[in-house]
Length: 124
Image (cartoon, rainbow, N blue to C red; front, side, top):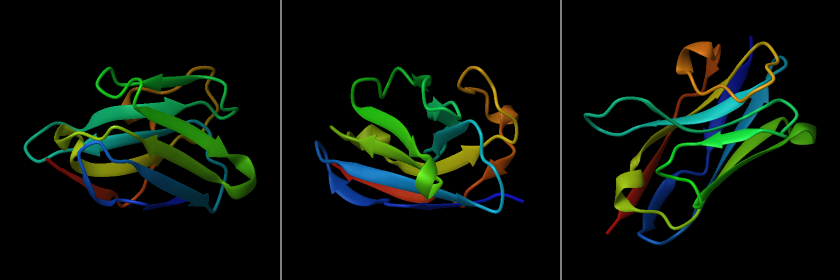
């Protein structure tokens, strides 16, 4: 059973930066992604990356500001968030799939493992 532990959330002013980390343990984690859920909003994809790190996808709302990456040696996936806006405020969740896929997984139903979430709050 893969376990995912997120860290790096917090409170930041608009325009600031944060880097989220998600460390996996207990088994292989193939395609990975970051999702977020704001109050009274749907769970939405932020970014996803393939197991080999070659392919990535982003939500239109974060393109050019956020970057997803992974370090296999540390079993960790990162989400670098720059130019944060108040509308980025949400609980951010890390997710991992149990099978390799050729493309990043944008559909949350394709993920098998989820972290507990980390709060990101952006003040205006």
